[in-house]
Length: 568
Image 1: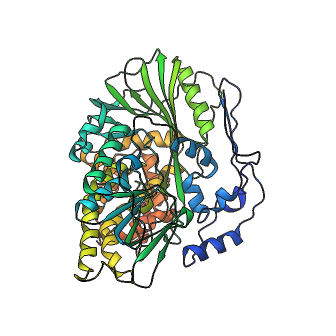
Image 2 (image 1 turned 90 degrees about the vertical axis):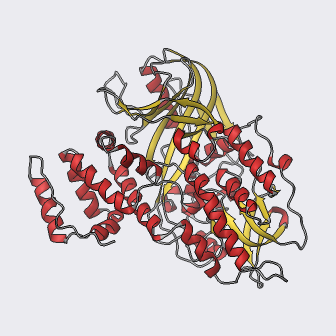
Image 3 (image 1 turned 120 degrees about the vertical axis):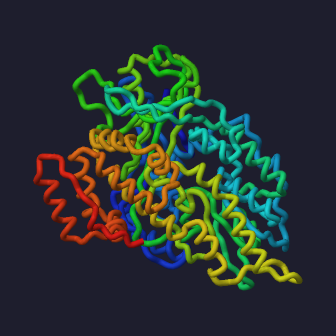
C-alpha cells in the first residue's frame, strides 16, 4: 500500500539544512519576529517526503499544497515543534477519524459575537485546554474555548495510581497489574506498579462534559493573533476576521504556539521524541498479557547486519490487550533531529519479524511526535500558557497529560483570583494593561523550584541524547535500581530540587565506572550541567581532580561528598 497526502501537484519544499539548526532571533513581538525570521531564511527547495521501499515496508509519500504552510510558523523552532520534516505524518495523526467521540460544537454553546467581553479565552481543545476551561468556568468565570474541533487521537498510557488520584479511573480502559522493562537478555526488571491505557474516547467525553456543565462556550476556528487594546483587554483574532474580546488569554494549543507566545531566548534547542505504533492482531505474541512492557531495549536481530536507523537508539513499548491483540510501538526516546516515521516503521516490522511475530490484521497506525526540552515561555508577557504550550512536557520522558490535568484546578483558581481582584463592581472586568497581573499566574506555573527541577530534567535529556544503545541500557539498569519513590518521582515530576540532588548522588554511586565517568564529563562540559554545577557548587579544582582520577583509575573509584556546599 502507498499512502499519499496531496493537495495539488506542488510538493512542500523548505531548506532544512540552512535554518533548522539556527538559534531563535531575539526580537520583540510576534509580527516583528516573523518578519526578521523570514529575512534570515534561505528558501532553497528540499523536498520533504518519506519513501520506505523494499523489505515489505509500505511506502508513504507526503505532499501538501505549497510552502505557505511552513511560512505560517513563528520561527524555525516553532516549525520543528509542529512536526518539522515529519509534519505531514503529524497532521495525519491529528485528523484520524474517531467516530465514538462527540463533536465539541454539538455539546457546547457558541461564543456570542458582539460587544460582550469574556473573562477568559482558552485557545486549544486538547486535554490541557479542555481541563483548564472547565476548571476556570467552575470558579465563576465566563470562559470561551477556541480551536479546531478535532478528536483525541493519541493513545495515552498512565500509571494507574496517578489517574486514580485525579478521579479519572473511569477513563482507563485496560489495566496491567505490573510493568516490565527488558534491557538485555538477562532477567527482566519488574517495576511493581500498575499501568493503564486511557480510553481517549472516555477522556474526551468526560472533559467535554465538565465544560458543558460549567457553561464553557466554544468557537471552532484557528486563532491568527492576539491583540492588546488600550483598555487593558485583549482581542483574539480568528480566521475570517472574527474578533473575540476578553480580559485574559491562555494559550493551550500545543508546543508549536510561537505565533501567540514569546519564549525565552538562548535556551536549549528543542529535541524530539518520535514513535510509530500499530494495534494489530497477531500470531506468536511472546509477551505476557498481564504485563505492560514499558521498555524493551533487547536486540532481536539474528543477522549480523546493521539494523535500520542504528544511529537512533529505540525501544519497543508494548500494550498486550489480549493474547492475540497487541499495541506495539517503536519509540525513539529523544533525538536532536526527529527520527523519521518511515524508519521507525521499518525498524518495528524488522523487530517483529525477528521475534517470529506474524501480523494478521492492522487495526490502527499511530504517529506520535512529542517535542521535548526547549525554552520556557517568557514569564513577563501578558498572555498566559498551559500544557505543552507552557513547556510542561517532561523533558526526559515526554509525559505531560497527568501534569496538565493535575495542575489545572490550581492554575484556574489563580486566574480566577487575578480577574476578580482586578474588577470594579460597576464596570466590566478589566485586567491591568501591564504584565504584572499575569505574573502571579506565571509564577504559579513556573516558580523557581519548578525551574530548578526542569533544569535537572534538561540535564538528563542532554545526557540521553549523547548515549548509544549500550549507554542507554546501562543508564536504565542503574535508574531502576534506585529506591522506587525516587525513580517514580523522577518520571512523575514530583521530586523536589533537593530530592533530585540525592537522585544524582544515588545514580552516581550505583552506576558502573564507565557511566560515572560519562556523568562527570557531562556535568562539566554540557551547558545544561552549569545550573547544577553552580547549585551543588563544589570547588572547581576538587571536581576537576576527581574527574582526572576517574579517567585514570581502572578500578572502581569511590567519591565522597563532604566538600560539597549545598547552596539552595
